[in-house]
Length: 166
Image (cartoon, rainbow, N blue to C red; front, top):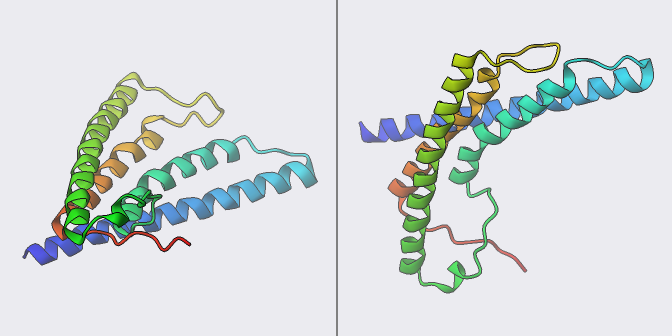
């Protein structure tokens, strides 16, 4: 049963990564379209920049948990590589607990921000008038995925061996 829960949570993180990838593709398409429309047809869009920014925000927050799970984020492992395996595992637990704490705080305040924006009815200042709680939802959703990633890292309990820098 616990293995199924673990696999489901890991699957959620991968879904977040796939959605982040889709956001990156959308952002690239919108930017390309804007360049062509502006450069060749002298007809800039009113939506490409704003939606590209929201896509960038979504890709960062939804993809960060996958980065934690796959050790794809930037690490400074000069000190950690000098430790024994046991020392690396201890440091790994400390770092993951601190990451989980950060994620919890980030998610709580992200939800508060989304609720406040929703209650105020805030919309973007562009012609699109997008309700701002929609792009802001990426923050707490990404925070939840990040919490799950750190919990799974703690459950795994192993230390990442560090990079292979020259």
